[in-house]
Length: 198
Ligand code: FES
Ligand code: FES
Image (cartoon, rainbow, N blue to C red):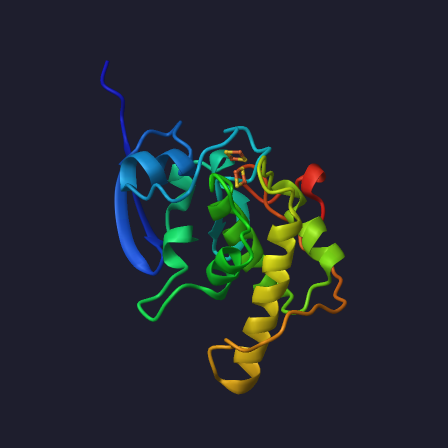
């Protein structure tokens, strides 16, 4: 039986992309198996681990819970878009320097989720970082190194914003920040109760 496919036009990491997908296929499946961007990982495939985190129009989502056809007309950001020709994103650098990964399966999701946080809240407290990242599971690190890396990257990014430099000499630090930002779960805009800090 021939299955009809839908033509999707979207932008991924700043580039126009078109692909064909079945209506049942998730955005995660489309990114990995159709477009060939395998940086986004599949952990649970049911919305619990955060390994598949991407940004859709700037909003953090679990791409296993979004349909590929919903990417139509949207701007998608994946881990492949973090680094630039000039170098790694400060979060990537901080994860390396703080040994915030072991097997690495969860890392793209943590990087994208952390980027979403720091774009909204440049000066998050440690508590806020832990709360925000509660929907990203890691079976290797114990989380402390990840949280330290995010705090370190936040300090570097603030330093870079203040001085126009690359922030390489910034010290780690954190302050207070609050405000609820709901993470999209599923295909539309519903907040995910288990990840209410996002
Ligand atoms: S693969 Fe686990 S939340 Fe999507
Ligand atoms: S580094 Fe292995 S699951 Fe996080």
